[in-house]
Amino acid sequence: MQTSEAGTEGHLLRLIRGLDRSRFSPRLIVLQSSQWLDRFQDDRVPVDCLEFQSFSRLRDWNCLGRLSRHFRQYSTQIVELHFTDAHFLGSLAARQARIPVVISCRRDLGHQHTSKSLLMTRFANPWISRFLANSHLVAERMSQREGVARHRFDVIPNGVDLAAFDLHTQREPSPEFLQATQGKRIVTLLANLRPVKNVQGFLAAAQQVASIIPDVCFVILGHGEQADALRAQAEQLGIARSICWMGSVTNPAAYLAHSHVGCLTSHAEGFSNAIVEYMAAGIPVVATRVGGAEEAIVEGITGHLVDPNDMPRLAQCIANLLQDETRRSTMGRASRQRVEELFTHQIQLAAYQAYYERLLKAADQRELA
Image 1 (cartoon, one colour):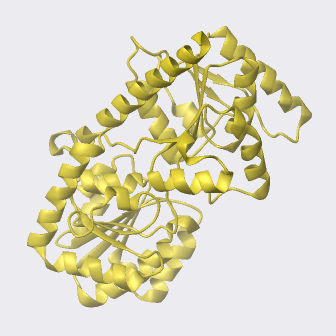
Image 2 (cartoon, rainbow, N blue to C red; image 1 turned 180 degrees about the vertical axis):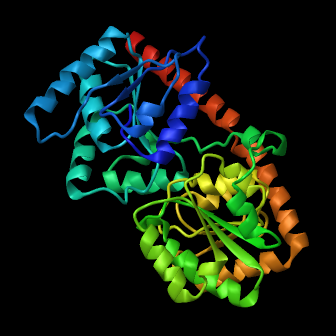
């Protein structure tokens, strides 16, 4: 059950579509409609929309009974919850319906939490069977923040579909991109343009790199509320001509195939999909040491990690890689190999399916006892 966030939506879509139908019958229940839901088309996945708006509306509390009836009607055995409202409403409904396994997911460090949402989360936590995080750091931080014992958390890292990064399956990037980057060394940032991603810091680092390496182009793949302010900042820094603003693209792998270095400048992350996508594309990564970055990047082998506020160090790491083709290629190969060994969608999917079956077996044993 989910509400709306691009990273989690993509994760859910891949997970639901990949589940073995001989073992699982997934059903997607959303609190409210969205543009993403309108685009969701899969005849194998039934979708129910509760049209929930807010807990402050008395009539929306009817969703609790409706959701509980949904669970019973479809003989639900596992409920997986994403985001605060779904965690609160879904855990209560699952308790009413006597669902044997209730999993609540934590995929970031809770930077969006208000005191109210944290109170709601803590209230519902006792009715959760297990908590599932996408990095060990997320599990540790959210355990402390929510007052939940660490042993109640499990970790399954994000995975990426390697087929999307194989050259023979890629669609070409846009002509604008190819024209802007022709003959340039390319540094790519894959991120939504919002405060937590610290794109301002990326632009500050870009200015420093451009002063060292004239033939560099900084590609930004993403859109968001800060777009106008960031364009203005690039103008003020005198690097506007070195920035290629591509907005949101549906085929980032095609752009990463042309890139030399991938970058992450976030203040906070859970387990960054962007990092794994850079690595899958076979390029080294320079990233801030946030969330699960240390669990993905091996310092000096697949990339570099810097403190979140140290943009000069981040810029120097980028410049060093752009100036050393041999080192860059070696790191890129190591990055791809690490993804193949640990972070593919197939590995993630197998881990989820084994996880569901293990929890169901444990629930059955408790019931028999």
